[in-house]
Image 1: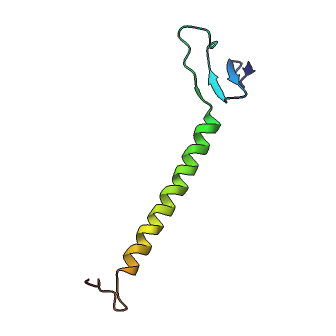
Image 2 (image 1 turned 180 degrees about the vertical axis):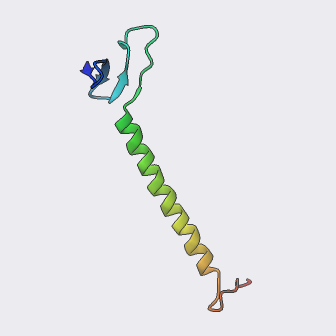
Image 3 (image 1 turned 90 degrees about the vertical axis):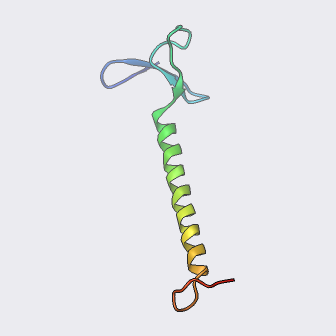
Length: 73
């Protein structure tokens, strides 16, 4: 158990990084990933999206000739 700055306890499974406000044995417990883990996943997804956008832009540029017109095949 960890005590928050507001004086509330939460449960943290250090091996899986799962957290819950209620005891994991409580029938109403909602066990989820920690906020830090979710934040890290979101940042990684943003980087992936940016790389994907750059790849699409590179493909569009390669489809154009020197005059900026689309080349026909």
